[in-house]
Image (cartoon, rainbow, N blue to C red):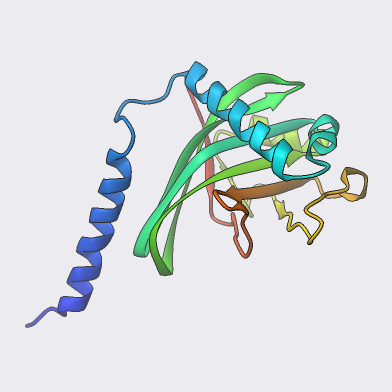
Length: 186
């Protein structure tokens, strides 16, 4: 019985990428203060990159921010990040986001994920859950900006809207379906 060298090499490279991505940051968990500082920085980037973003955040019932989510893979991939839920500008809890995927993918990405709760009931359902699956427990409408790079907060009528911002700006053709969001203690 022979194994296919290409499959074994792909598996080895996936493990190497994930381990390398994990070594780029300390092995210890971030404190609440560290997460809050990262959330503040992600919100500042969002405000700078998305015209109308500040008005949207002011209208929000709550904002869940995952700064610096790492996604790594080679055929099989995974992503993980930690963030905070902000209500009226104050941290109301800390959360992790995790997802796995299979398909064409290679390398490591770092991105900010920002979920804006525009309806009180959607925020309440989220907060009452012990683990929240995007697409199952709640639907998130990902916003794609046009050439103007702006969003009109008054025209958004979805309960939850999301933004995925990479190092080059807003990222396109992404999905959050299958991502699991779980409360964490900090």
